[in-house]
Length: 304
Ligand code: FPP
Ligand code: MG
Image 1: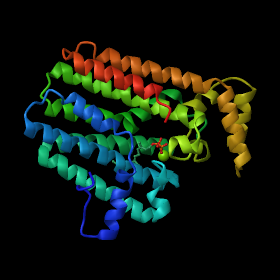
Image 2: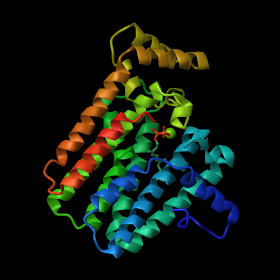
Image 3: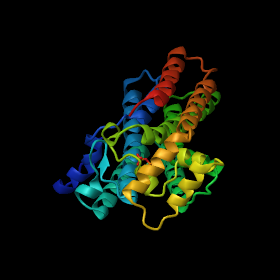
Image 4: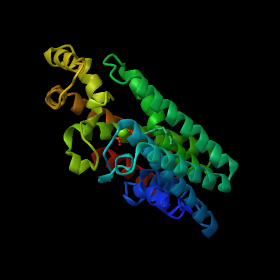
């Protein structure tokens, strides 16, 4: 990945390498490499590794842009690119990393880059729907979950699709792996939204409870707002304030935590994880099945 974002502009290279060097869980490339694990030919394995790097780079590219949109200061336990350099520089870098990833996939096969194009578009549309519903306390749970299918599950589906393409799996297994990717992505995102309410900023490596301030109402907030009670009414009134202070955010977080909505989100994450495991029950490869089941379990048990 570091080699793939090299350029003749030394200063810019520091920017494009910044978030890659900062680490991350690398879940999407893991999913791709697992789904393509039937490959025994050395050259094919190299190709799968290139595709895995490209998928992670697309994810990283979206984080450059997401941090600009969220005005985030912290990402992957380090300063965000927009904060360290500037928002325009972060946008250029995000687009550059994306461009390099698409070139890598296109060199593998036009089908691979077409898949990436399709899911990048879904990612953008998901992000757009989230932005359109910023500060909307009446956003329905169904619409929110549908948005997550594009915004987060899209790249998991892409990873599984590319793994299935390169690994030459049967149509039936490919469909199962794609469904698995979708549920894993949803489970992963819902766990993320739980952690925003249960972990500190230091544990997360990014700002916590920042979603509420930015008007990005995640499932815990929407579930709390959908309740019929004093907490829900107070939260609604608080979110309507023209000038929301730190103390209001803290109170909002307390209301969400006390409402049981965080536990309900954690439960839904576990259900999506179980649904992911169910979709792969028919896979003939036992090692792959067990590995994917483990990945689904880890995704909803993780604390960071
Ligand atoms: C993080 O969500 C954001 C995403 C997963 C997607 C962002 C997508 C775009 C900005 C569209 C651009 C797309 C490409 C392909 C470059 P979050 O804000 O819920 O998570 P966080 O808490 O980690 O910030
Ligand atoms: Mg964000």
